Image (tube, rainbow, N blue to C red; front, side, top):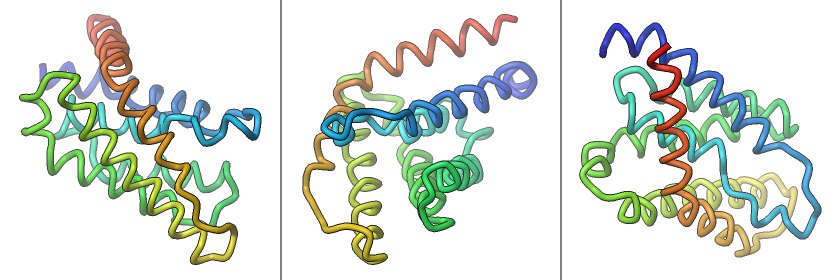
Length: 163
């Protein structure tokens, strides 16, 4: 599986990260923006759990830089936050692998909530907006979608790992 992971699954990691990047910046009505799950963080958490030796902080940093470019946020803001997501996921991956998907969901909710809190804090620090607590809805939705998202990503990984 190690040779297979490097050659076949590895491009799948970048493709899924790019798809989640598109989902992350997809235009939505203003009223629905706070309900958007953090697709990029969820994808990064999945790959850190599935392939902890191949996917790590670098992937989070690079995906965050791309998100910074697409959103027009100060360079490095999302890179820092998604690097923290990857770090936390790698720190907890052995524990999370033991849990069922419904037990993993609160941990994903906390990780995405911390990322969204950091994003809110940085927006306030840069003077872009005021602090609001509605970002919790996005973290809750990310946690609630986690079992289905994990299953979807597992099927994608198996489909493209077999060639």
